[in-house]
Image (cartoon, rainbow, N blue to C red; front, side, top):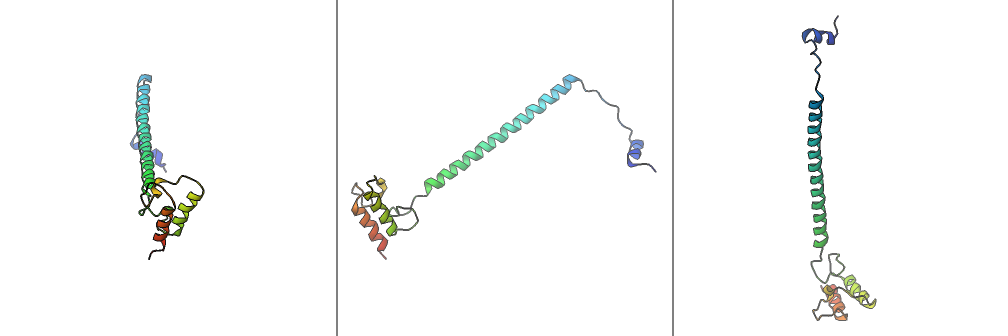
Length: 124
């Protein structure tokens, strides 16, 4: 019984071996390297673009996380006594509080601003 390979050879004998000239071989190899280089450059550009987009989104998320209420100085999403405590603690420490903590608009962050936040925290 014939093997599958023998049956295939009987139907389609092998083609003669072709010799590829060195110049043609080198030209095909050079064209392939150039094509691979283009693909790699495109892929690198896509990854760079994706990384830049991710960084921009992260920056927008970080910058966009500002409290909706300026009295929410600790940024936890609610105005409570902890916000007043944060302002008072910064003042007691002698630190320069951010200008955004000047909640009464008098140009200075002081006890009046602490009182304003505290009143807001206990208001129903």
